[in-house]
Image (tube, rainbow, N blue to C red; front, side, top):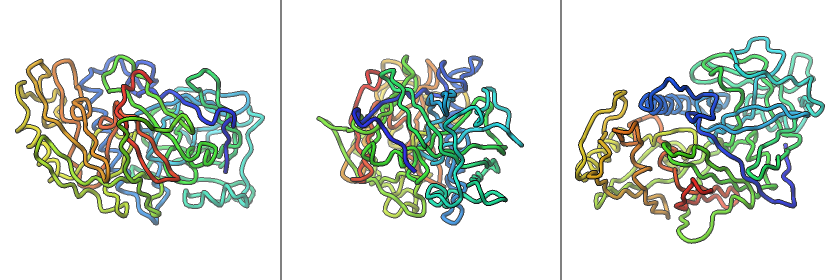
Length: 417
């Protein structure tokens, strides 16, 4: 499986749009800000539920069904057919619903029609592409001629269809489209479950062989990065970089080992040793999966999810050390520690101590703005799986160097990237 970047450029950058921003098909103008944030929190819990139901002998559950937080504009085929897809570091396969649909969920946008593309080719069962997708649930059609995929989810949703090689085009920030010929995708003809009609595709960015990152491979030097703007920023567009554009360097860069687990190749694990609130340092145990890794870093989960005991210690430490301000309740009843964000509110310094990297968090990483009158702690108790969510990553340039197995943090004003 391979897709190629223009060798002359060596790298490119694309826009990521938050699903709750006005430019997103998921945007609901009738929702209050508090409801949007509450829904994002609930999606975090739903996401970890799907993740935690994965098992090494059940790799078909790896894809997450339509609950990532960031969207990317792509096109499939020749001529290019536009799709608004979820960009997801917690899944691998690139897929969309395709005509003809024997049993498909309702989708607001038109469906991709392979017959309308001159570059669409199904993949044979004997191909390297099909063999490499065995861990993703590939099989052969009844006549043995076409490679097929089937992915199931913890919530009983599923997608199945043909594995194909197709031209995938990304809209780069320079305005020049980046065409990636012979990208291996899933063309779904039977899809059902909890999928939203607003979504029309998923671009997997995980560590498995079917992901876009893995397919780009050496053409991007195994490097990608992103810089996510704060949740309440006036500019809702974030940036994702590939190849030479993804190098994280200069003053303030901190790096920690990126830990892979062969039984869970999709996920990017880190080792979080402790979190400090002011002078109080709280040791972190986290999840037992991931080998020496104890927490997954994920762009598609809003909140940072931690074990109940750790959350209690963290919440107590924050509450004890906050000065000024007025404690209040979350209008949606989802978050447990909230304040009125007036000028008197002073938050304690918080540092995430990853192995080899002490990452100092800002107030935007620690608290999420529910509305103009309420901010709440952006951590949540969960004993199934620990995830370092995207609020904690906002206003950091986060760089993945897969050959070196490192992840880098650089404090950055992401609204200027």
